[in-house]
Image (cartoon, rainbow, N blue to C red):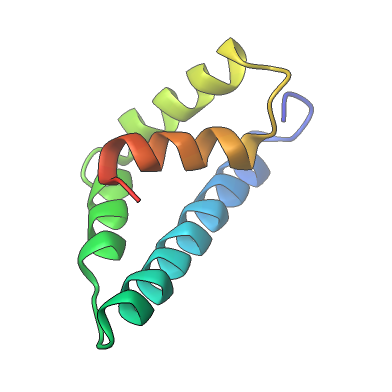
Length: 84
């Protein structure tokens, strides 16, 4: 991640967030048996309400745990904020 230019890193992070949000939508919908956007909307609110603050928090998490895969770290932040 350190070697990736800022624009590419930001696009990567946003792509991971989108993927996690959609996966959450699918999981919640299957579990409920009908369309459920609650978890997906939580993830989007978390990432978009203070988008710069969220990106900085993610970047700090990357720095704090350099031996962990970025997807795992973003997933853990999402889980902390929006549950499973």
